[in-house]
Amino acid sequence: MLKNLQAKLKDQKGFSLVELIVVIAIMVILIAMLVPNVVGYIKKANWATEQNGASTVFSAAQTYVTDYYAKYGQNPTVPTLEALKDANLLTKAPAINYSIYLATNADAAVDYVAWSSKNSPDGNEGRYPIN
Image (cartoon, rainbow, N blue to C red; front, side):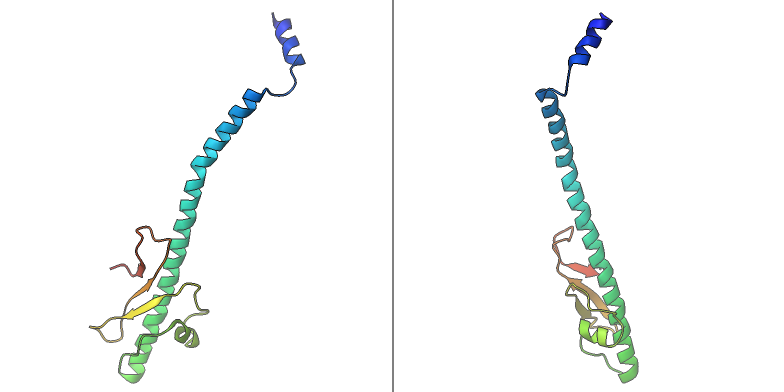
């Protein structure tokens, strides 16, 4: 019996078509499960990068507004990203267009920074800090 099995295995060369199809089907299923997760991780990473940029812009804008208020005794107009860069508060203008909103009821305060993004988890515009 063992000799017959060894003889059959010795004569067998390669895989059958059914075995190859089963392996390919398993690989397709695994890839189909993996791709949406990878896309989701990329979207979350991009969102985190945008939030980090907003945090940097918020800090730079707050410094700009505070310095302007201390120097001139009045609130400035809304600073642009280029104005923050010219004041050496940002090393370079970010790739995303952030909008800076000043607080209306406080002296020398930035209310929040907003930006629009397709990476937002809830589909709304991004805001930093989140109120």
